[in-house]
Image (cartoon, helix red, strand yellow):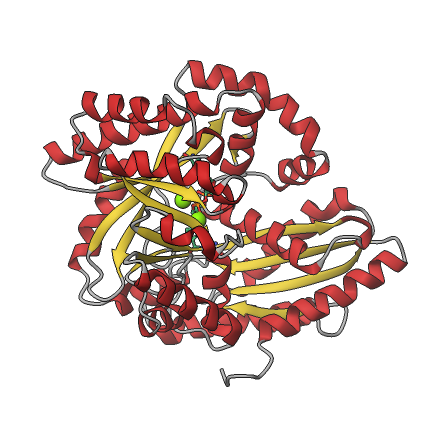
Length: 438
Ligand code: C2E
Ligand code: MG
Ligand code: MG
């Protein structure tokens, strides 16, 4: 990538915006399909990079052959193509169209019987009537893809239906949520945080999952919204903290020390009983406070920075570590920054994902690094998916990375298996997919 040149991603977003505006003029629906060769890394690992390259080339050829309009297919990351469908006659038929696309592509990618079959995921974002921005459509498709990668949303039909009316969906989930909470039907997944240079494990973030028997996995953001709406967010956080602390103890007894991070929603940060709840959980499960990091989103600080800072200081004084999550999106003011008792800044993944293609985002990350340096905080980058991004982050001085390139969020048992094989790797290169060509 040459600095200053428009990146493929920018060109793609520009085209998506343009076609969105055209769809709006004709009151058409537009769909964006992200076609992801999700096991490229494993294919490269088991076979050779040349096989991975050949598969990508074939995928690209097929996608271009399927395109009905000019400039509707873009390679937006090392193993993901974006396909814009500017006029979808009937949204209800989209799953059928994608099903057909899948079978054609899978057939074309069957190169050799001995090869690991290519695994394709289709993340879909719909822009109804063309009124939505390109970025929002892309975000929706990326969220769908991320959910598919982590095992959520089995079915595109469900996803499209769930996209229709968020409020109705939220209301429909209130009762199932209460029942699931009562019956202990939730799960915690763990995603590694590793040293950006040595690759050594420094901890894991505990991420909430709600596997609903009828609906598949429900996205954590929606689940949290349901918990907030039904006033059960404190109860849910308590479940998360207890489960994480119990897991910490179980691993500790098995000789594995994994410092854990949990997300503390801003809505409960200033509750007077929060610190007692946290201490209680750690006491029961014999987990030292210093082993638990509390991730609090930057967004949570801007409403009442003074009150939030005070609450965070109290927690820090009890020995917990504090991390500012999704940093860079909340526009927090520097005037109170020096007062924030955080030990860690987590750069929002939107900057990290665009890093290789955006000089502006590199500048933002550099500024965040300098800011963290002044206040003696470590910098964590989340959303690290490839080697190019990792190298940029290293050059920019990031300390710790978290992302699909290292590990996806996974259940505790799988996490231990992953850790076993991660420890055997000689270098990051072995784990990461090949550098993106775009
Ligand atoms: P977060 O705290 O910023 O968590 C990181 C999110 O980034 C996770 O999404 C993770 O799967 C995703 N991620 C990590 N690496 C990559 C990558 O390389 N590429 C991409 N595209 N995504 C990556 P997840 O698990 O879907 O959670 C989303 C958000 O939901 C979390 O963002 C957090 O705000 C909230 N959440 C999750 N679990 C909990 C919880 O237990 N309590 C609360 N209050 N919020 C939670
Ligand atoms: Mg977090
Ligand atoms: Mg985050």
